[in-house]
Image (tube, rainbow, N blue to C red; front, side, top):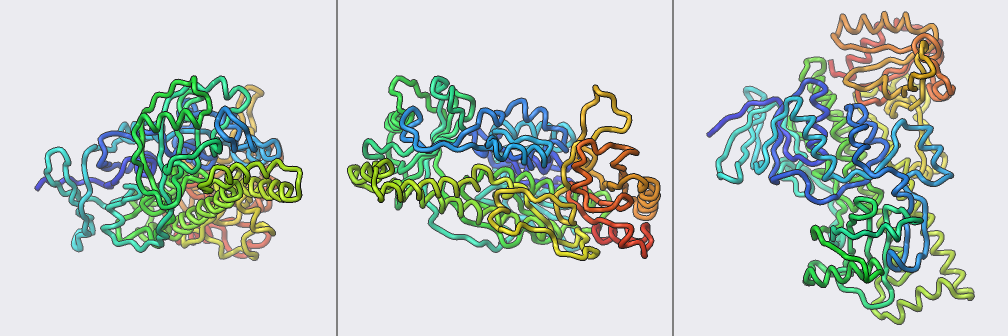
Length: 595
């Protein structure tokens, strides 16, 4: 038996595993990544990349490169319901922050724009950075089992070289299961799952076709196609088309009729159906790949056992509605990376790692519930349009009713519009993407006199992002200017001052000297570096006055931000001055890090 010793074993090289390795290298942590597959993703799945995920990539220094190979939001502008891509359009809605009524909200609250960045394009970028900074990567290796050695506290994992059949033992401090929806690591740990069976069957067809002549005034990411003029095959009750490359490469997801679990059609038949869905027989279609998948409603009730962690699709599996899949995977990794990094450096107790489950499991559960709720709204719309009606004549009658000058027609149109508007939680679910708040021992909210802020109307929490410096909330974004900046110097976000592997304190005019001294005391006592910035004049100017509206503290107060850019604690001098600031911050940092 061959033995390999390493810091971290990551099982899976998809968005979760690759990004985890990438983020870990920021803390000097390296290890081994293994994957059952022979390469990065071959198909352009998991494509929509949210503002929050680009914030993580920005912190890792990858935003510019990732954006250069992605499709910008201007070219994923619309979300359409139509008979075919070239045919009759029933509705169109703005998508991905392009709604004129929503665009300002996105720009005010994040330094990053969303874009379309397929998994097949993102993975090589992440893995390149990870391996250039010390991680080893092995394709065609399979995870079999693991156990924790009582004497050493190390995890012994048995892996197999698929090509030779040879088994090896990897001895590591931690194992991270990022091995997808059929996770062997999660099964090995016997993690408890909430699993609702019977979600439905779908076929993905990845193809090349020049549709630029159809997209001049309809540059949309999503085109929902119902093709009502002739009977549809069993494997395609409705088709969801999305672009991969404007406007030459596409994926059509065909949702099967109820009860269908396989496709018996030939590739030629599938190509002909793709042409039917495009609605232009002159288009040349070249199929690049065909795959099947099923709709999931599944999340783990626990993410960890001992020194083994699961993240990404290994612990939350759901339909693609809302575009939350790879985004949640990468944000899982971003949360876990700094905690492993601080423990490996000896700056935190292993108890800090317990907060990974406490903080991310509720997020995964909420994502699964949200996406399946969106699926339910789609089902209402499909029913209203007669999508599953087997009789073609009746199906046309149902659709024609939407245009009739009758009371029934008016009711149908009102119902159609109401459901389309309800789907704004998918097209512009900014709150779904950004309103992730944490409660754990790694957050100090003990000093807060009031509960955390919330929307009066719970429905708004899915649509809109609620910014706050309340502990457990994401650090608010505000554009700043360095105090000595010239007109040629760029603006800088509060996000750019935080993150990058360190804790940060934001204070105001007059607070810098005191908080630098306090941070220096923490460095001497706990060896934890905390950067201190004064916003308002000394270091950076609050040129739009956004920070003054968002900070929630007085001038000499402080906001402590974790390395993952979530607020850990805040201090108002006039209300909390009875306790020495140095003693207080040492107490706060000690609990956060489990010291």
